[in-house]
Image: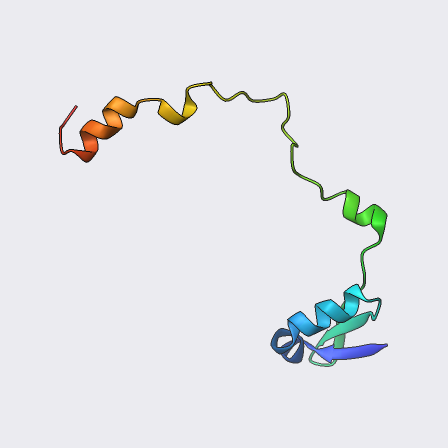
Length: 82
């Protein structure tokens, strides 16, 4: 398995991540001591990170959200104190 010094890993991170995504695992070492192993995520690992809609049903947005307090906002932009 490929062992890469941490400084080299920082310099070539994009390429190394692409390689790992293709299944070419590697180890990052600091001062010659292996610290972490970088490997490709499996399908089950990726499904754990889906966050879109994670608060569905928990919050609500008012129908007038895009116009709320618009009169105050326009006044402030025109330099008027409220």
